Image (cartoon, rainbow, N blue to C red):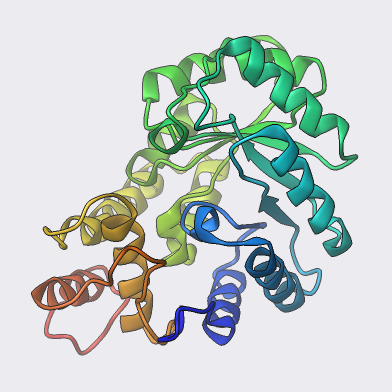
Length: 297
């Protein structure tokens, strides 16, 4: 974000360029790390304009169509149709308390509103509902959703979903967003990863993915261990919680790497300052992303 609180489009374009240079297979725009919940319709459109324009067809782009209830989600899908996206990522409805029946109806309604694939975004920390393994599997078998982005942090549930998906002939593509146990998710049956930390080190996650595809589990573990050290950046701001600490650390790291111009957050969150920034710089140096910062690469 700019100092004026607007979306910093040049910084966003540099980030997309960094992802492409890192070798990613696709880009997920308007997700949690993209602070989608804070953006009005015009800002969401500006983000998609910048991302798709920078990508220019080099890799598929999927977009978060995330809002509290079904009609608003469908409106986001309709507004994004002109960008020729590869699909949409949709959470369960939130704010109003819902159960399995309402959640299923929600996904079915959104899928019926578009010809593009829909991924279920399992992120209970934000929507306060955990998708059971059986629910997305049924939706996948019925052709309603094409896959799941699992950011639940529930490795037992993910493993159960992966096992059930495999037994059913793999109707779902399974993507994990759990930054520090991507190696375990691959062993369980994940097809890929979409971690927020991938904004900071896309090449590291790409190397781990390629190693997993090749069955080189020693290299997978080595990359995951290094990325787990990098993830320590989110624990450095001890005065912040939630996105202000986690996404704020990603933004701070990207600023220190010269990708972002600021580490500003959407209101009411405030940016990370002071000694926490120095500690983040030291971690970036330790994992080999930042040189000349007084720590070994």
